[in-house]
Length: 163
Image (cartoon, rainbow, N blue to C red):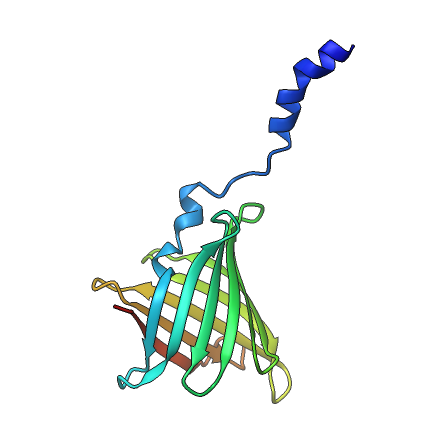
């Protein structure tokens, strides 16, 4: 019996190995990885952001520092159980935002979520990240208080790689 258990041990050990994040779908958001200077559309600095791959390549960690003193972090991952990308954002004002989405047909990463609106009701949030030909990334965050009929820009920034 002991010999049979020893013979099965290697196959049992490999059966218990966690799945890896090596599939191409886990690399869809890698264009955001890097050390960035972030600028508003008028060219003025908005802040700095560092995006790095952590946890065996399964998670992208964002580290934001805004010129206004804001700081925040997000965790971004592709969830193989639902086939979608997820982001959880938290910041030094106590805010939290949870988004879900994925690549659209044009190659933009687009994630959507809801949060309580300050005026009551629910705010719908949509954030997109678009890789530009020059290697920069445009992030566009917009919000709607009427279920998506009318949108207001909350943030538009161009991520420029630090030299």
